[in-house]
Amino acid sequence: MKIKIEQLVPHPLKDFGFNESDIWKNNYTFSSNEIYQIVAHSGVGKSTLINILYGDRKDYDGNVYFDDINIKKINLNEWTKIHRNQLAYVFQGLHLFEELTLMENIQLKNVLTNHQSEEQIVKWITEVGLEKHLHQKAIHLSYGQRQRIAVIRAICQPFDFLLLDEPFSHLDEENQKILLDLIITEAEKNNAGILFTSLHEIHDKRLKNVIKL
Image (cartoon, rainbow, N blue to C red):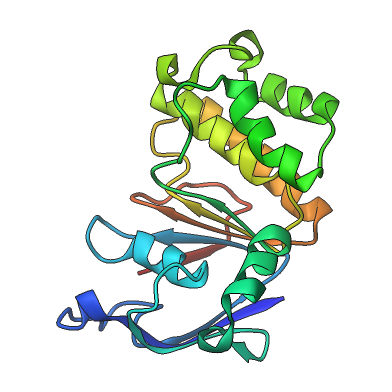
């Protein structure tokens, strides 16, 4: 799968200058099996871009294509299938249910997709250092812990692209690397691409595509 952007400009950002942007008012192609780090300060549309690619925002000029299909022509039923099978998403706000436990938040999605075994989910939770919090409610966890839960929940489905909106913002370098290792491993299993946003560039030799928004 390829995601192609042509002269994309969100309506709320129409009056901004985009002379130095690799994305806005430009042409760009995201390919599977690649990792893309989109770096920008607040207020220039990082979340907006991800939400356009996910189909949640329609207020833009220009075009976005999934392979050769203009996403403006995709109907609601088709979007549902795409969200279930092709695009996994970690929202910046995470969208966890605070009164549910760590495991319940993940299984809430996995029950619908039936994509991963409980054994595999527990293995991931252990890898990111949260095994002691397995049955703790999300409301009692730190934001960095919640971010790790949201990532594991997101990969409980097949995907061609994993979209992540500032997924490492509350993690120290060690936990950031652990989570990045997990994300890259699962993307490789799916032959999928990764596209994530960040306020600051994350320096890792695997992150070769650094994009200025």
